[in-house]
Length: 460
Image 1: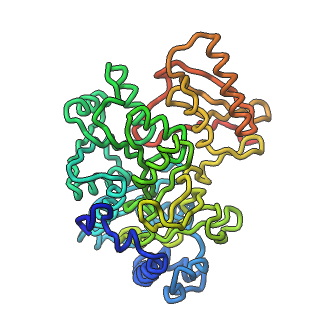
Image 2: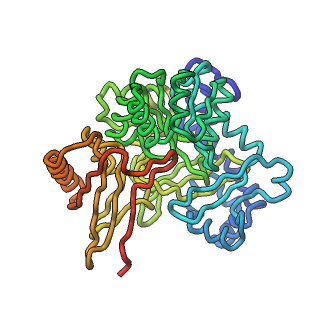
Image 3: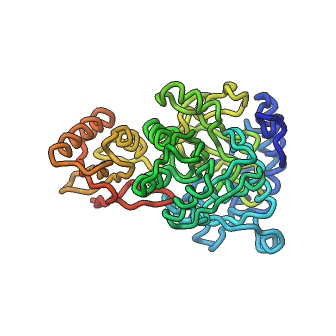
């Protein structure tokens, strides 16, 4: 749909469908997608044949566990053997010449970068289904959005840009310079800021240094992607307090959820705000567009409804990348009850904050970087930037948190702050870190995914 159907819902026939109707929609789309994928993707055709399956054997969502999960490593090997596109994509050169739209690639943070050719139909699908998510956040025609990106080949900013266009939300492309973006904030008074969580805080600090006050700006909504935000309570509180604005998240991946992302809704964020930021947000997944599974991290078998496990996604909403049982690999647990906003899509409790690929093993203990972020951002005396540095001292791994202070501090206060930070990490993580406090402005800034983990450990 290219226009919202009601004041509250862009496409209520999908967003408010019963669980039974959503299952029917998924089964109908799965039946149409599988023959297309089998015919046009040599990768999936070979994988189905190896499992002794045909598209007819996967008649419904209930049959999906018959098909083995697809991993990023498999895709990376496929594209390495058949560069530059691999055979997992169903788009060949003929289709690309006829209706190609844009190439996107993965960031390469956890595997070899993989490229995807998306078509003009994908552009249409991305705009309409991503508009649903923005509409649920309360974005409306008449808003103005400052997008802080250099428009690299990553899906978040492109899909949000096209959705804004469809919704008649004016877009201010922020260029590449922070000072230019500050000037645009002052001159054009946007109501929406779209950025990574890290960059939204960096921009706010730059505004303060220039004599401005982000909390008094025109920004009413900060929409983040690329890194966890809403699901990390201290980060959420810091961004919302800094900008005096609602924080919303979009969540997806280049491979299987590039448009029509998972999203936070206006009512859900309001409920969290009334609870003084201490309760987790919930992130809606658009179940008429993707089939979301949660599997056990060890066995890869489906977990019971409501159980915690790793996310696996089948994309029903793409010509260029209709993936089947792709392992996204974030830990999540889903609530299948109706949201206060009226939507019936399942919601990830607390969002998607712990990707299995990001999990660190330090001296036999497992640690997610998001846990360290939660702790660091909970200290007002610490700034927004931090790093986790892993090294080997003799035969033992060392774990150092390098964090900026929010203001210059004296030696006595730095020792006291380091001790408090160390104690909190030990309490929550059962690991004793080394603490290095740095002056404000020391650590690198980025407008895309911040590099939080520096692993220099030797393989012994």
